Image (cartoon, rainbow, N blue to C red):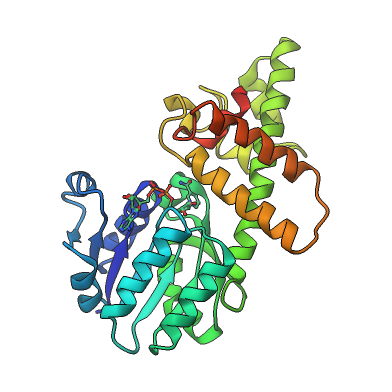
Length: 288
Ligand code: NAD
């Protein structure tokens, strides 16, 4: 049986690792936050005390870290202790350049690598319904696809290394913009005197429907359970969305792409960061 090392057991990583463990895979976990392992008791995830031990004991290592700096630091450490033939998959959302750079360093040591950022949020991570957007070669992808099938419903090989990250920033720029638009639509509905649960029933089954309404409705008490029901605690932190929007804006500049909504969305999230609400779920943007 293949042993899976999982590094970064935060909001997303926890659900992903638990789903792997429920499917009879042996999971060795590592996170710099020791408190996380209290919550992981009785989940079947074994705790590793450091990256060296985890690397030496795993066939496939998955990382789910906050940003490019963390992925870079962790991958360089993994690579130091790795042996040829191991698989390394980065599911974090990071910039394309760092992703390509760490994968090239790993390939030079005969490791097989993929960038495989995800969409579907904490709910998708818990339920095993994520979408994986993958960069790398077809053979590597096919060899680890069984893991994507456990943690998610869709995995799409988008192109060579870095292509998964490119697809991810396009997706998140769109998601951030639609979340703001969903907030405005509910605001108008409220001011028109509509029952917001009825409005949800309409919007989620009509031409305006989208993931930000159907799965992640940002209005408390409306739609399926989402971070808005917990006063925007947990979920996908605004600071992480702001990071992704920054990556998108950098890519827009590098590719001379002309955009409008994406820039306005970036500015709106920048304001949210400036008022100190970076830790709350990104759907809180509708309150600003
Ligand atoms: P998180 O902050 O909850 O989890 C990150 C975890 O990594 C934390 O537990 C942290 O302690 C750990 N960590 C940080 N540096 C580390 C290091 N050097 N070594 C070991 N562990 C380290 O973040 P999250 O919400 O789980 O997001 C993880 C990634 O997934 C991010 O790149 C994010 O952009 C992306 N993402 C998040 C969501 C979401 O809804 N939360 C959705 C899609 C993609």
